[in-house]
View 1: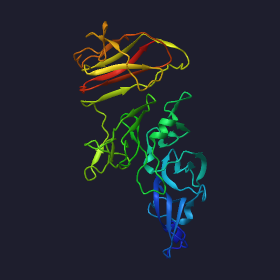
View 2: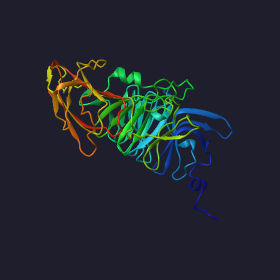
View 3: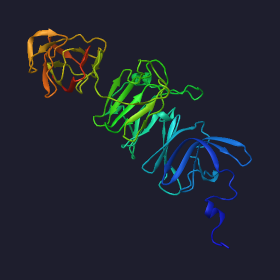
View 4: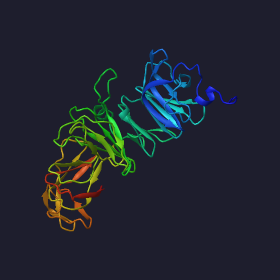
Length: 389
């Protein structure tokens, strides 16, 4: 007879275990162990118990076994429940609605490393994993945990890139007592190293609006109605996932659950609008004078209007520039709302268009440029914008 092995050694659990099965809201695999969170425990007698703020870890290499004795509770009965689990750098990020617990799982015994208040999420779709770390969004900001610290991506150099009011009006948080499956969601485009935050996953008004964050330039761009159906209507959407090719995909309810891929390739557009931020050149209280603007572009810009506004007047962009010659130099004498050369400059070389304002721009505090127009060709591209001031 086998006198060496016993039940606990073979099965990986005590024979007196009260429960080995649990339902769960979220799960991650770390070091050949599954951690589940937001659990409903099922006992031998069929009774169940909800433990919304607890985690259970499986034995090593036993991914469908969750003994109750291996429960992990970092904050017991705090009135909050686990929404999402994500792992990075031997840590589990345990997201609740109002906080985020950072749990170190590098050793046999897990321990709470830190708690970040007001950094929870209302829906699992508000969290995604990148090659820089774990990113998530809520009404207070957009965050990235890089393995060392939590960074607020809405802040740069001690300045806020998006105002509190704009962000709060953009983000949608799902009510815990509501059956509405909505809420803001985030996805990652690894090929461009960009994060995409969508206003809402439900078919509400303007729910397809986005904020796009470029991790290389550390800058934000707002996009109007970038996630809508082919007929222009708002659609319900699933969370984002990255497919085998690294593309960002999701499913909406437009065509019987069809799969859609995020595509930022240029298209011919009948309505084109690109507005820069309100540029104060790092000195918001100092008065400036604007001499000219250089725009490097190629393609057909004949239908592109270019105007400017000053001092934070975001609704009025009426300032004009003189029209450009074929080589990009200014004519200095023909004022126009469409100042680029009135023929296609081709797509082989970049043209540096010299935009000279028709009126003096003096004693201003900030400056903003708006590119607009109709019937814009798909080959029109802007490479960079330089302002002489």
